[in-house]
Structure formats: structure tokens, C-alpha cells
Image 1 (cartoon, rainbow, N blue to C red):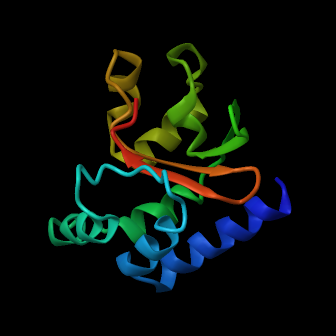
Image 2 (cartoon, rainbow, N blue to C red; image 1 turned 90 degrees about the horizontal axis):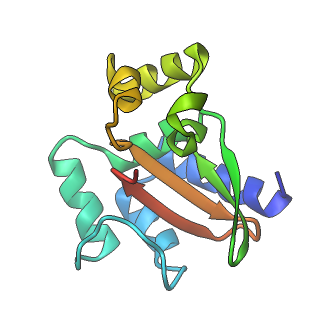
Length: 140
């Protein structure tokens, strides 16, 4: 992993462990086209709403970063994507990956994904230059 990606991931882990949704939003706001599911709200407003519903975005982000990542090409170069299992075709879900899916999303989700469920969890992407690109949920 390039040092710029490593630095961003370390920053995100620190925010996940000790920061707030405001810290996440401040970092996201540094990227003009940053993507979240904010639906017209600011990232700060959206992530505050998520917290109020019991879905703490900082904890979700911290948890994602404990799993293996995928590397995919994009128009802006390589993108590092967490978790790897959100990017895999169904036929590549091994028993070990199925356990990771169930550990991340809850028991039975690996089987549901094998049966056509679109990835219902969070996905996080960092460009090879270290730019945090997105943190979305339900990103098939």
C-alpha cells in the first residue's frame, strides 16, 4: 500500500477510535466530490443523523479498516477499497470470506449475498494519492 494511503488509513483509524462525526466530515469536506449517502445534507448532518439512529459512522469506519482491502483501477489511478468482500463476485466468496461477511454484517448475510442480496454494508475508498474518496452504505 502506498505511504499516502497508509497515512490516510491511519488518520481514519484514529478518527474511528477517538474522533467524532465532525472530524470525519472535516476530512470528507477536503475532497470536493467526496461521496456518502448524505442525500443533500452536509456530511456532518448526515453522520449526526446516523449516530442518532444508533449507527455510529466512526465505529463502522474503524471496523471496516480491520478487514482486508481490494485494489481496483479507476480514472484517477488505483483505489483501495474496504472491505475486500464488498467487491467480490458471489462465486469468489470462500468459507473464510463468508465468515468475515457474517462477522461484519451479522449471521446469515454471506448466504443472503450469495443468493442475490446487494452488499448492504459500508464501503470505504481511498485513492492511491491518499485522498479519501467515499464512505457509503448499501453500495452493491
